[in-house]
Image (tube, rainbow, N blue to C red; front, side, top):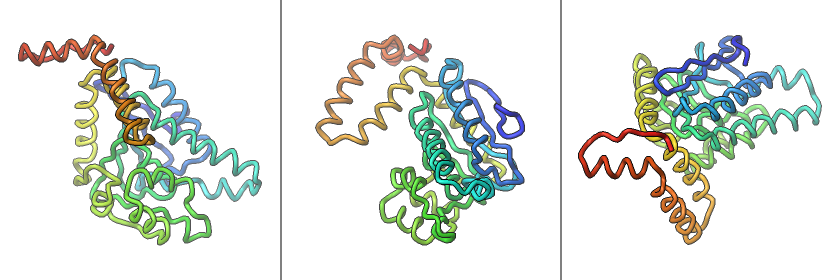
Length: 259
């Protein structure tokens, strides 16, 4: 991980990854995709980290793919590799054992909007703006569509994809793309507080819960109940579940062992 494009800071069980290409509006170049993927892979194996924040430096959150990089290599093989790497990153976020929270300021467009939609949670400043504007330059946001259509309603996703219009943070909240909208001065503290609240839970329990959430979404109703019945039964056998129930009965705070 190069400090020139991605920074990491750990605090109270929360790892914050900060995109650091401010002059390029933190565009997702291939080196940035690799840095993010590598950092998330390392964090996934770090039991001291129980929540992740993806933030950014500069005036914008993430402007999507690096169009200059794309035009510098007008080659189908390059395009296939680039979009496969981006898709792998977004899938990694969903598969990440820890919850991932987007801390969004400024613009988040195209693959940047995809990044927000891929995260488990998102908090936006009042100044944040979102769009999937590929249609405006002849490049439909097909891969961002995957994450977007799983985060917001079908008609809202189609509106964003077909118009390419920028929408404000309140509209993004109304559409369900973000969880909260806060004043810019409160964005860092609000996101950190949410991450630390999650980090205070049993890491093992949150891990199986996140995995089950995404898996059951792809199932039919009966299959989903069969699957989650097995998940919660296995959960009941975990040390932290037994500790949590005992603590509740005894009216005391649980002491998690994250197993």
